[in-house]
Image 1 (cartoon, rainbow, N blue to C red):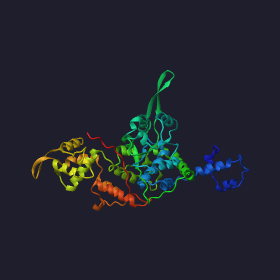
Image 2: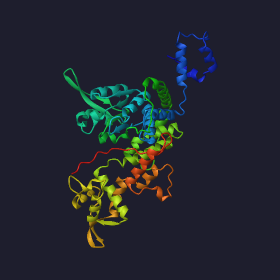
Image 3: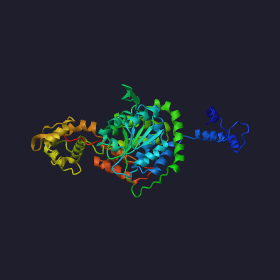
Image 4: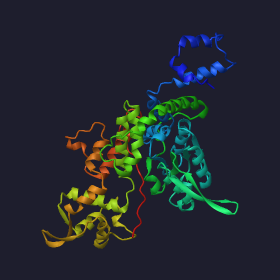
Length: 459
């Protein structure tokens, strides 16, 4: 171990003097065999620069994992840094790595993260009781693989204790309470739940977890996506150096980050702001290109989030907006709107449990958003229908601005060019997907990332 005054001597570090000592000229110091080597290694480790550490971490991740987009990788990079500075934050976003099939790089991502996060705990499964105690004793960075087998939509009810801890643990000060038997008495014991957590799984995770997560929808590598073979013993030296640099940065950065109020991009509010705030603060503190990169990632990932598996209500509002925009109409009869909805092949309205949506079903579903039919004048007379203005409030509150989504996806947005703006949500999704698949791994700022929101049950 280095001597107690090592920090002071680092400040006065003389390379020539240390070089002489390294050659064996250590007579003027009382060092036991090997002590100098250990102390010199500590000096070198403690003086590693932190400049460029996010770039180095990002390059490490890109080398071994084929992320779905650069934005997704940038988010994971900043998530790792936030784990080192977690003491500065009131909340910690979960990192959710999900995919439709095996072999999509989720476990590989956790293996790389295990080498760069602080106090890693990589587990496939564990009991809630064990997890309570580990979090209370060590505050580890949890890396939970195969999360769908114990936290998935179909299995989550069997592991409510575990899901409760993961849900509560995103907020500092959260406690979970359990009864423990002490002799003949039962006492209530409280366990701190706050800890950083990354989860990997196939399919779906509960909305309560995804709502608190940076969601990365992993996918299998395409033939043209190449990564290096991962061998931990070969990667560990570089990874540990990055982890040491991040730890050194965090030691000085925590006081600054505790008082940080990073500016949020337009559209990142409420729960999304809670999720992204630590990552934005980290990027602002480390500087260089990262403040712009992470804000771009936040916008793109949240924009794409609205495109992935919306609830039936959101899908209905989205499809209504598409229809009114395509027809350039200020009002439509109920009959015309129902007919148009049923004709959308990619939407479910033509086959809801074997039947098409009807006027009553449309009214019932729109009523939740304060959109109601009324008598209006049409060319063929007075009929029941919906005005464009009836939808404005619901579209404003529940749907992303379509133009903003398209502009965010464009590498060099031109707000005065109408052609750069996709008119409809399906075009936005295609736009994001096209740019994700046609840009280089290192330089792109385009991409698509999804968020799962569980399909609401039909009433």
